[in-house]
Length: 295
Image 1 (cartoon, rainbow, N blue to C red):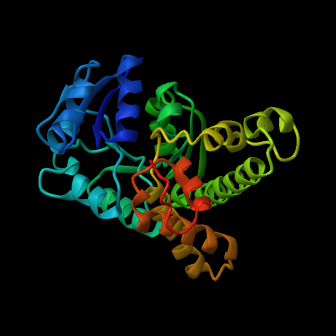
Image 2: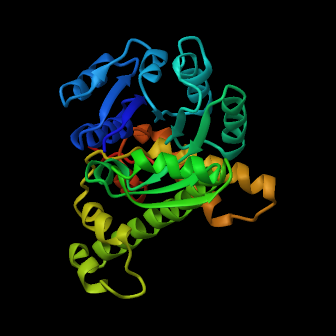
Image 3: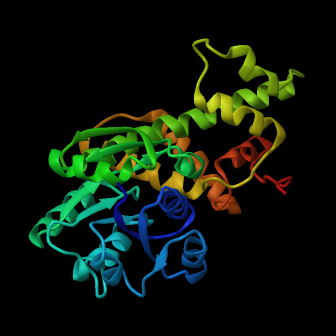
């Protein structure tokens, strides 16, 4: 059974989610301010909407994939937003990575309008979305999270209800702490291997199945070793998520010294002009403060 789905936000991540939903036969209608991004999905079988409200009006589910709480709020509750067109009971699925407190506020606002809100941030990036193997961590009422799975099953292979509204976003921040630290650890180890004359591209195979093995090691050490910086994500998005983790840590009075160091490295890379580059470009940190060899 296919679903009627509105997608608000067709950037790198939203575009991949939309591609998968269209390719699996769902009735997808898309709104984004970037008409070229919308057209890419139209070419794959989606329909274009002139506003988020129009997209929501013909959909049972509305997926948002946007960059900040403010943009999510405008897209859903602003003039021409999804809430204007959505039928009562429509499930709003926010797949953006935003802070838990903002999510709780948005969920409350949705409930006041008769809408259901599920925060379902993701791990796995665009490559996993395209093959339906995202890891999703969901927050919201149990029945709403179950309903959202009718759509999210097409893009995910691991879907976990973490608790009430905001719990999904909290879990995503924890995921990003682990990923951020993992990227730096693998990059640092890669540079040591290169400097010591060891073939870093062979290390993932050599360590496969051992305690140091991980998905990050297997995917990224070969890319780090060869300076393969093709874009599947952005360093400045990691800055945003690590900032969110640090904000949460202040609220909970949690000491996170390694996360602080990791965040500073990512901020330095962003200040050096690499914010829009893939996470693999953290290797530039090991070329010195000027990073003058980046190409």
